[in-house]
Length: 274
Ligand code: SPV
Ligand code: MG
Image (cartoon, rainbow, N blue to C red; front, side):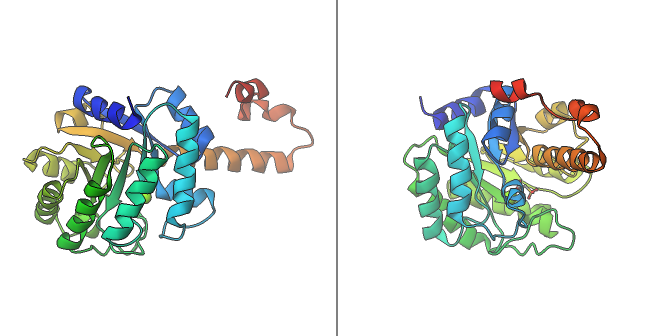
């Protein structure tokens, strides 16, 4: 059984899938060890580890290399964030071929124009691609996959761009018709109301995915009640790594020796085990 089949099986059988964000093989391995269902290789976290903004700067190949390394180190499925698909429908076909060939189980593409900016960036540009042009990308992705179980996630940015629920629903139906396996409905609100309004109105059959970064107090139970099938914790690992390193380095810089800092880091044995 390929990992794409395993991911499909999990989607069919579990009430909700918990997906942890990772940006390299070590963070991905930790996501796996801690019992998550799948790994999200997010453009925000991967860009940040290159000290770059999440603004379509890294190339498809650079993102592919990170996901490929993670697939090699982990047993659980990997879902790759492929931004806007790195171009038009032909680029999307090529992207699917490349990511599927290295063993990634699914990709997500979003309906913004290239170059995109991170959806949560204050004052960021969130211009939407036309529904028709994005549906063509989903069609291309669907046609390009070798294994039927390879998951194509259509990510809707209508709520992020302020276009509203009606537009989000209309796009979701169009993308499902074009072959999307899952619909990712993204929001930057600090409460989940608009996500729930969307999911309560959704009459399609594609399961729904959310990324509760800004509405972080939402409970998993509530997500299940509102028909959400997958929750992606996209960037918490990156932020924790940044936080821990920043804190430690500040303390190290002012210290005469490292005695007081041993509890601020994993032991050598922890790393040997990894
Ligand atoms: C990412 O993790 O790269 C995402 C989610 O796409 S967000 O940062 O909320 O846009
Ligand atoms: Mg992203």
